[in-house]
Length: 113
Length: 111
Image (cartoon, each protein chain N blue to C red):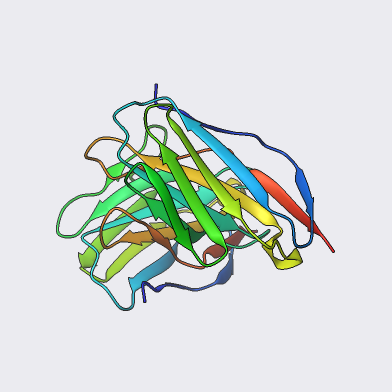
């Protein structure tokens, strides 16, 4: 149990375009989902906490107008990177928490050219 | 400031040995503790969670928690080369349910 999926697993897009990443909890409901970013050889960085039916809470330094989060249901949260630039290229990982423990999705590798 | 500290390693152990990974945390009010394994280029995988003082065993893994010393550890028995990864200690403090991660310990199990 406790499986979290992400789609797509990798994406290449051109600078200035937008990319949507989906995160689904497959076998449990999650009122809270989290979005992280990880650069090579660095630690996970929490970007935002997503609560079903309410606005996401963004961490300091994360632009909420650039990284749009929608937690539309108890099993789905989406992250849209708007007007992507090469510096947004990273490994984006979501997690879902049925209780305190968080289960991570497999991640989405974004490359912006 | 809430902090979680781990030895960055690298830690090398021979195959079949016990690997011991340690973590300390600064917030005495922390209530939930987790160990994640992360292979290079992959997302973290939950290995163990522990909420109460003492030991918790799951297969080859044992988590140990000592809240008085603000210390949590992970023991891996009969270590295998496939256990080679970065192990992340994480803690939840307060009601926000956000994980505070340590910087991770890189473990290498030598065949």
